[in-house]
Image (cartoon, rainbow, N blue to C red; front, side):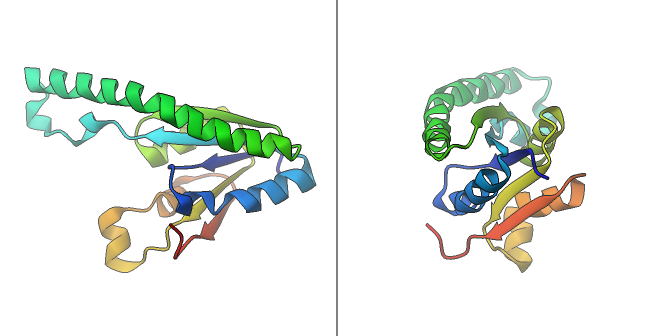
Length: 156
C-alpha cells in the first residue's frame, strides 16, 4: 500500500515522535523511507522594499552561508536516523532542502513519488497555531496524497 514514506524532521524530539510509527509501517509493508529536513532561507523574511539594494545581496549571501554551515550537522542528524532504520531492515534515504517548508515538502513528495507523508504535529491550537504556523496544517490543506499525523504534545 505505502511503498515510499516521506518523513519531514526538524531536528526536535517532538518531530521524532513519528519515527516509531513509520518504522512499524515500513517494516510491515517493506516500504522505503525518505527522511527530509527543510531549512527555511533567511532571505524570505527581508522587506520587499530592499530587493533592489545591496542589503538584499548581503542577506542572501548570509542565508546561503548559514545553510551550508547547518547542512553538515543536518546531514549527520538524518544519517543517524537513517542508520537506525536500516538496522531494522528498512530501506532509508535522506534529503536536505532549502526553501519554504510546506511547499518544499510537497515538492519533494511529488518528485520522489511518495505514497504517504508521516509527520508529528506539535499540538498547537488556536492563536498559537496561527502565530507560529503549522507545517502539518499547511500540508493537510495543500497535499494531494495521504498524510499520517501523530500529535507530539509534551515531548522535548
